[in-house]
Length: 187
Image 1: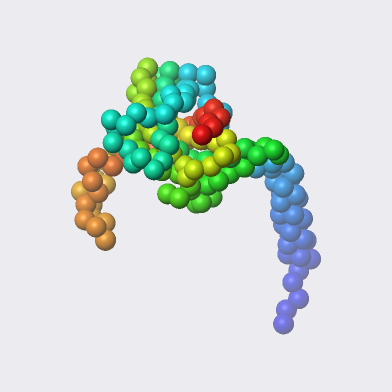
Image 2: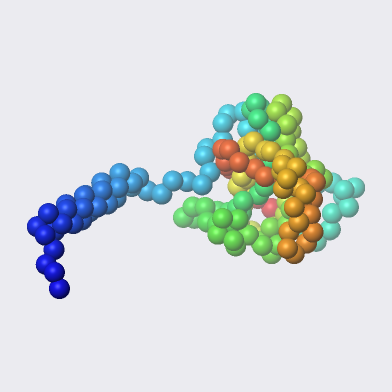
């Protein structure tokens, strides 16, 4: 077997040194803590607890439904959804179910809204939520997703291998993601 030349060995060593240096610089440049999935909401995007729901809405009588209002004072349309339920104990707030951790279930939260959850600039929307009975104070975290676009005509015409064409009402959401934290609710 032929012995590699000194030039090839030097080039290989230099390449390895540069790769290690690049890896070290990349590791040092990383943020010290992970970036949050949601940004804090701008001042124009707010959530209020409106109080208990009256019976004429025909909600089940076994749960204490609360009404919430989200107001969009920003210049972009936003889509919203409940992303977490939290309970307060003596040592702070603790998650009872999170959308990000895939632990938010119908047993930890029941939610109902009369609209698709889109809020145009300068308007508001109301939704309803309830938890299983508890003596602990609770609150909701709501994720708001900015900027929407319709699927292109090409995507609408293509068929999925499972269920036919993409529905004409489907939307994708991108842009900034904000989180609203609701006020404390006691039952």
